[in-house]
Every structure is written in C-alpha cells, then in structure tokens.
Image (cartoon, rainbow, N blue to C red; front, top):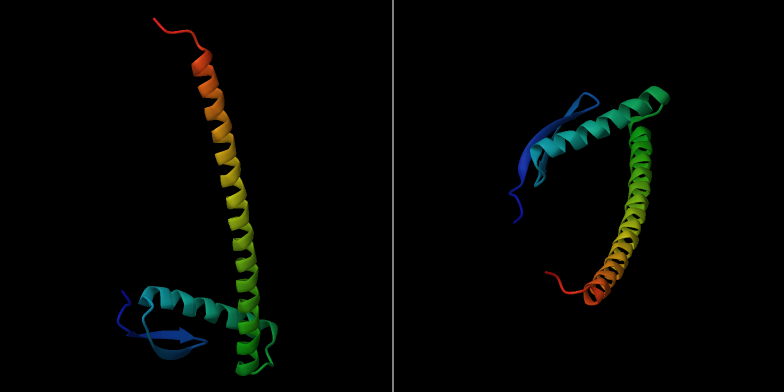
Amino acid sequence: MEREPQKVTVEILGRSLTLTSTMLPDKLQVVAGMVDEQLRELQRAFPTSSLAELAILAALNMACEYLDNKDDFQELQETYRQLQAEIEHRSRLLLQKLEVHDVSAPPGP
C-alpha cells in the first residue's frame, strides 16, 4: 500500500524547500541532510563554484557511490549464493554419512 503524499520542509544550504513526497518525513530529512552535507563539503573544496556546479558535482559523487554500492551488493549476493550452495552440498554429504553410519550400526539395547 502506497503512502499518501505529505508536504515536508527540508533545509539544504540554508534554503528551506517544501517537498511533497510519499517517503516517510524522517527518511526525507535524512536524505536532505546527506545532500546538504555533500553540497557543503563541495562548497568548502570549491568556494568559487556556482550552486549549479556544486549540485552537478554532488549528483555525480552520489551516482558514483550508488554504482559502487550496487556493485558491492551484487558481489555480496553472489558470495551468498556460493556459500548457500556450499552449505547445501556439505549438508547432503553429512546426511549421507549419517545414513551410512545408521545402517551399519548394530541394533541398540
């Protein structure tokens, strides 16, 4: 079920922006905080750059981070699949050994 859009006011670089979003307000505030932090870092590094240039740099940085995280996630998924297959393989071997042991064991008391 999709949430009803809500108006949320965030602050980025000292500017208040009222956004309408289905995102939880707290989450939107966190996102805005991340954007604000990125822009402030770039503003310190490039004090003569315009806001538009800083926004483009921030977007590029965040897109790069996103792609890096996406690649890392895909690697983790592949590692997970490999480990899951290894666990299943070892479990089958263990069950086979237990079955062989159970068949060859003398009857109990």
